[in-house]
Amino acid sequence: GALPFDHDNLRQLLEKVKSGVFHMPHFIPPDCQSLLKGMIEVNPEKRLT
Image 1: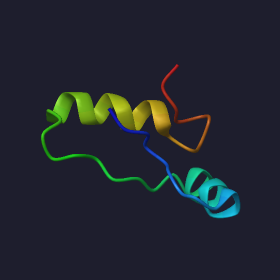
Image 2: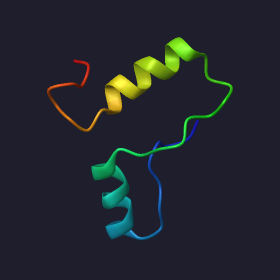
Image 3: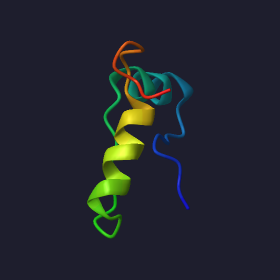
């Protein structure tokens, strides 16, 4: 597996986490992609719990 957010520079890593932008591998099925995106949602009111 791989982390959704990764960077050698801590400041840039935190910016990636705060922005919520990440790469989703093409081989992950659409229903799993939807679940993962919901769990990583930046807005806590929209995030899956």
